[in-house]
Length: 455
Image 1 (tube, helix red, strand yellow):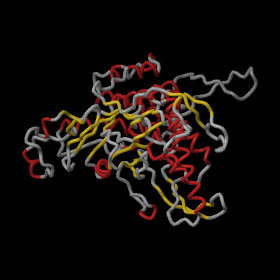
Image 2 (tube, helix red, strand yellow; image 1 turned 30 degrees about the horizontal axis):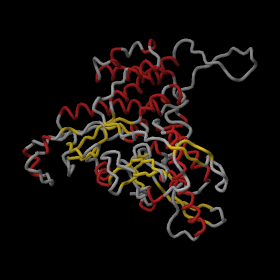
Image 3 (cartoon, helix red, strand yellow; image 1 turned 30 degrees about the vertical axis):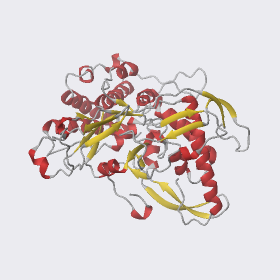
Image 4 (spheres, helix red, strand yellow; image 1 turned 180 degrees about the horizontal axis):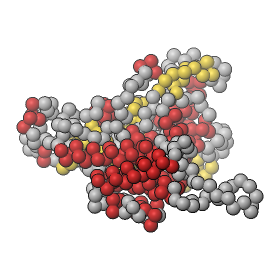
């Protein structure tokens, strides 16, 4: 649930919301300053504790205010913690940014009863049903929420618009998709083996009965470890992209060209709207490197499942790479959507088709070479063969020096003494240092109910 509508008659509720937003934002900053989460879901689990402690009808505002710290600019000073939320793509913080959902939120408005017994209009999210399905399927952990940090990414508006219009595409790292697919295949092979043994918790201590493992693995079977990497992806453009150059602020500002567009094409001059500088033609810039962002790779994969493939007039190489990748993404999502009524024949048919797809589309890779011998590997063995690009930009913020301080624990009364912590001083925290200018959007094109206030 999200920020209530501005015409709400419950002024007290608005005041309580403002206090809750400030409290959760500051509490999460202190929590992060102590634990410095690099695992997206560990961050979201801590975030969930702070949000749930407020017990607010407007929890979306609390989720948003406490998100995006893992790639923010953070300084620990004598006066406390200073946060500058930055774009995951460019690293910029002095521009208006938008907090974008990966799995589509699909906002709608409903009426709810506030704490003071006054009816209020609040936002809710149909996309939570997808997240709940993923929780049940072991794709995300129990703490997952449509609005949690693992399902959000901070971008400039122009990138969100380009993504919505499909002029810019997020292309996931193929190895991170393949390791998920072969892990799913391995799980189903073990599940359908002649005598899989899963001890039953019910019955007497002498009960040695066993049952077939559930159709879906638990999150901690292998996704718990795989998700710790975060999301790794490349940015591809289409010929409709207005500006093919991205300036990334790292140690210094550097310019890159978006992958997938032939900037030397004579025909491009007839559509390009960007004036090139005389000293450096656009085509001579280096290709924008892959990005590693501390959000859920599983949420990202689902978000882009229908938009990875780039067809004509892209080059054949771009089409072929993105076509093959979208194919295995679709297969992976098939596994995620398996239900308890799927028969053994259904599963075996899928296994045969999926093995063949890996063999035909990724020949010569570790995954294809071992697709018929997955029982010889543990899930950790499979994960160890993931090859991440050496030139990837790791957006995660480096840990600054620590200083002693204090914090309030989740659920602790607001007027209770705060607990000691190793992090920053809390008495002089300044919420004005936090950029809360993001606007809720969704990442990919979809059908909106305009009455619900979605973009």
